Length: 137
Length: 165
Picture 1 (cartoon, rainbow over the protein chains, first blue to last red):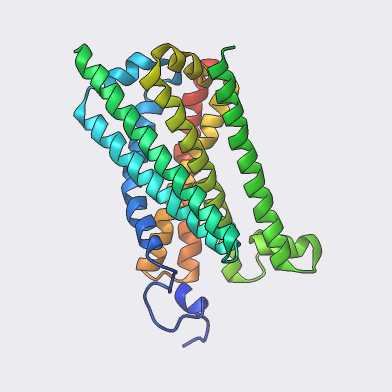
Picture 2 (cartoon, each protein chain N blue to C red):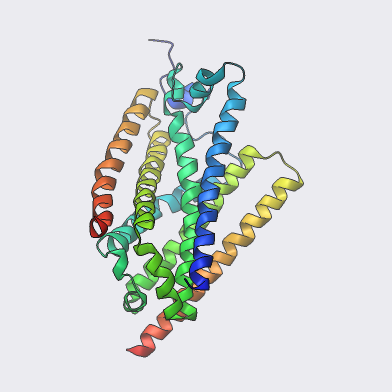
């Protein structure tokens, strides 16, 4: 048997198998939403931005899309998951690069406010546009 | 050019600024971590001049964070530009016209490549932990991530650029 580290875990200096100790549970949120987003975002990119040229994703295109419950549900789920994933990811970067203190607390607060505001704006848009689309039918 | 279009371009410039700042932050942090040793030490810290086998996938860690920050910044811009539709269809359409320009089409290609890399590298990180892959397997899966990203991203880029070529 060689003495070289066999696994990444051993190379990192872990003796026990399993995930390394991480602060909190945000890594789990990142991974669960990440797996979900790998389907939702790639599907969204393909259907909305590759199979339809950007010149054609006009207001009438979005109205047509958001008259379908499937796409409303798809985009709403994707919006929520993407913001949770991104906020948790950037929070990890903040924790890695900023020492605990007022600066880090301020950065965390800004991140939380911006993420919640974006979620509110996104959901308001989906509901408002879907209502217009359904009224026009 | 309308006020909404100017606002969009200002927000878009801010996104590019965030990307430049994040890249500079990564380079400076790695320079600090590498200590004395000049450019070679820095390349080593970035994982681009791997003297240690464990450092050979480090560049992917930095690129994962950079693409993540860039995608989050674009998500904010994208939510804002689509939200214009809830207020006025004509304002939305005027701002949306900007996406149909060669520079923003090039940006869209970069965005697709960033999303593809971030997705497949993220899945690789989950696999590495769940299957407790060894270093060599982790390097092999990273090569696969690069190949898949380019195999899907380059045809997508051709599709995006075709109307203006």
